[in-house]
Length: 303
Image (tube, rainbow, N blue to C red):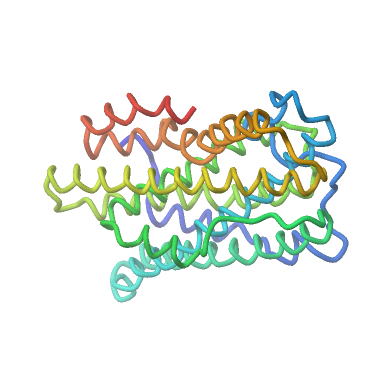
């Protein structure tokens, strides 16, 4: 590996980040529904020519709602997974145990933040926006896979959040400042999580045979396919919310175009940006060069 971090260093950086949910949302810190929430590189709403500018902004905000809601769903399986791996370390190496417990605590804080966001969103948007679930059923399915499969799925998701903020969100001055601020603080802690999960993948793979590792990577791909199926359902939910928000039904051709374009936008947002991230691919390549090459060959499907 080419990275230069360890459990002690990651814990130290995490402990210097001290934001609270109450500092970021509520008490006058409201969303601005006159502005988009998501960068166009992720939302991909501008190409939908049958929508007016106001309708595109509404769709962008629906996508923003889904974005934080889905990360809330995701973190509900990350939290028990991290706790399960922290528990055996409590009487072991101190920095490793403390780093994983800090990781878990921050994930619990993110879940709280995203629930508070949903409450604020409902106050301003006035249309029910469904999200795939229930979260415990999604968590149960994903956690039924090999721990290395799950750790790789988490690692892909964490590098995804880093790429989103650094490449698309940080310099986008058109976004609602409040929504952008939530993403910024999420990103600040997810950097440490991506590093810790890189170390966790190494820990889990240690002692496994190459055949076992390759089988676990196949399990990771099954998790990816499961997520992709969920994204198709989420796209349908977003279409339903948009039609309710604009108070009109799209034509069948428009609905078909919407589903194709927005499913692909969701695939890029939640799968493609992680599968093609150089740090994720580095970890994958260290575990199995052959599997890395195979995944690089199919990742264009999600772009």
